[in-house]
Length: 219
Length: 295
Ligand code: SF4
Image 1 (cartoon, rainbow over the protein chains, first blue to last red):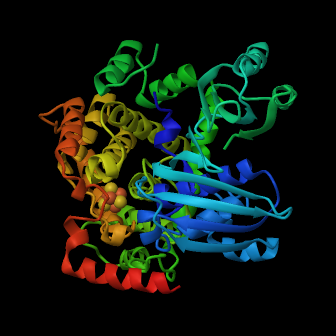
Image 2 (image 1 turned 135 degrees about the vertical axis):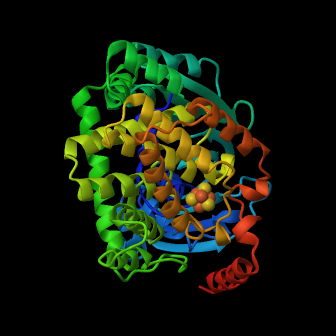
């Protein structure tokens, strides 16, 4: 059941929950996934995102999100200037990303250490989003719940080890999905939780030897 | 137990336990989310502050929306108010506030989606104008927002609040119903009368399509907020005069949902029908896209 504050609220910078608030959220998630200091960001706008981006401030919202501004942050309006101040280069491209949701964007982040991180996601309405790919691996989550994403070696028993940590901290897993590209190689797990996740918990998960990387998203 | 998904249930709780509408809405929120009354109250207060700020900012005379189609209309109506207006001070003040918020929203200002960004002018327009013109207390205004939240929750539970799913009747229609109940509450209506006001307001806007010009939240959105604001106040007055809706609110909500499902996708936010397909709109869309590709 919806909270009263899903109906009166959220507080956001206009004009559009899907084209502005959702865009800021997508970029914020991308920034968390990247996790490194971003030097340059390229946005590939598809469909309706490309067609009406300027009228909806989609580009300011995307860039603001990369700089860590949330959907209610009034600095979004001036995010181009902030990017210059922060020394973050940016570029927008119109792109055909194939048979995807009309409000889809591909965000390519180049970090100061030279590494590149890529995320594809869509703004599906009401400020809600769906992430569909990270670094060319198909993955699915919404960012509605506190979310943990792992990159791990695809061996038996990893899921059990991770859920033991959850059980120990009495945190309920709302959704769990496992994605991989090929057997015995790297795989990803997306865990969406009902409760807050503590730093201790994250540390314990990253101590599991097969875990290569974890990302925590709570927006 | 204070949970409700129908207006009928909401009213039953009010009447059985001798509670006012805002009390039940707050209690159900406490119960469902395990939050204290103070926290819930403070959060609503915070929303009201953002609403008031967006009205103030939106009344400033010279800013343009990002799409360039609207801006300055709130200021125009606001200064016209000093003359004798045909519709009277309260309605025009509320409409000026609603325009102010939608114009501020279109210029990337900070607003409260109520229930959506596109329809964000209606509820604050009504309650803030009533606060200013009729001197209702701060506390009454917050309570009125909870009444609106209760009505919105019923619509969200049984239909939709998204223009892409149900057309503008689900956004401006829902907001107008919420605002009508708030206004009736402020006018001293019983819970049942408040729901009557909401029923009449939503009924009056059934079938409204979502047809934004060039896909922007500007035309017809801004002025639709204006008319939906006036609609809310008129329906609240009708309810206070003892007029009832022949169709109960819950059934109006169901009808709204069914109409939304029957509506062509061309009339649901895709900008492929209605106002968005008029020659004027198409002309604008062409130059707008052209200018955008260059920059
Ligand atoms: S026309 Fe569409 S975009 Fe505009 S307010 Fe109505 S539902 Fe929202």
